[in-house]
Image (cartoon, rainbow, N blue to C red; front, side):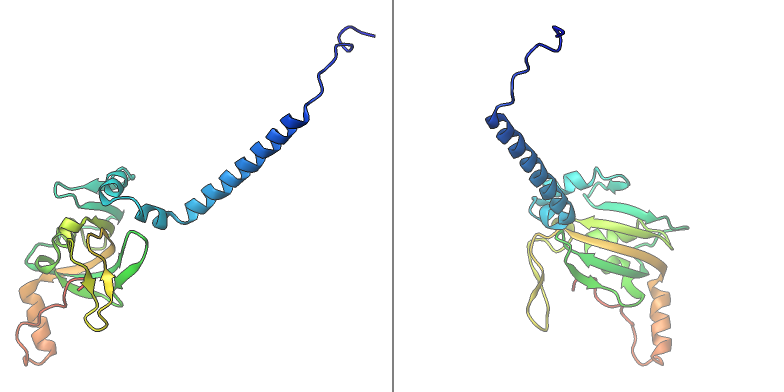
Length: 203
């Protein structure tokens, strides 16, 4: 018999097999847990403090942060000039919390006074261009601060205090406030001066 094939190979101990199978089971369980976390990212991220969430979010490709701390990401690039505080922006929007809960959304193109919005939303509008789509993250200091926003009819809290607000916004058009007011007066037959746009999102 060859000396090579004659060399004895120590048999595998039963305890080693047990540990091997335990290792496989743990690996499978870990993979399953990782997959579950991947499908529940908003819930997981909601547990992270605002500062850490925003610090991580601004590292996302395409996200830029302004000097005020507003974060904005261009989904579709618009063209031309941007609105100013004296303009009315016509937009489609959806507002969400960090846990993914939607608290407000436009049902149709909605006129909003650029200078009359919460500061973070106003700043974001002035960075947008007509035809563009954007995602913005507004920290509490640029939004509603520590005060919760409640539904005036039901009294239910729609936006908890110290919430980071996440909006998806499409800027369809914008025009001077004076032109918008004239259009409103014409539509109403001149009966109601001013024609003020609706309140900001979340109100």
